[in-house]
Image (cartoon, rainbow, N blue to C red; front, side, top):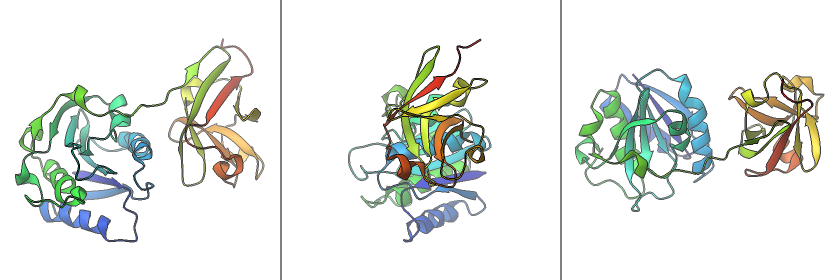
Length: 262
């Protein structure tokens, strides 16, 4: 079985290692995969995007433990969700909104059964270690969801607003939804919305051509393309589009087509 970890803990402290130690103490033969631990502190929306785009690449039954948790120790719920192809474990703060928009939940529980926590008296500042990693390990070992907590209504889960794109015959209006390590500006326009069309991307009243890959632009030039995640992004060949253009998450963009659809 496989368990993934996604956090904003960074790698300079021992927090990630402690999560893995907690999992190993319960399920020593489990395969643990780090999605990322470099989410900006408390950036739940970026965590939503990263988990959403990673989720489809894991085998059925994978347990995804995601801990970007500004409300740790507060009244926010600790939850586990079962989908048709895997499990999600973490805080009820919208971090799973992206996955659930594409993979509806089958069942959900609040993690009330302390028998599956690392300790019945968890640290109020480290539920990732004392609750989420522990419960995730037990689920990966085959413990049924109903044993780790009390059932809650799926429609009661906190949902982050997921930005969308508005399409017309000649354009698609969207926004920047995420910025990756390279400074690529990932938009809310899906790749299939520009498939088989000649298009350009417009931001701040300037248009840039839509191409197949980064090298279709000269070094230092801005280019639009469909990234490996399936979304249209704005990039700079061998450069940083975010630094070059000054756009941020939420900045508006427009895809403009050279011809009407056939």
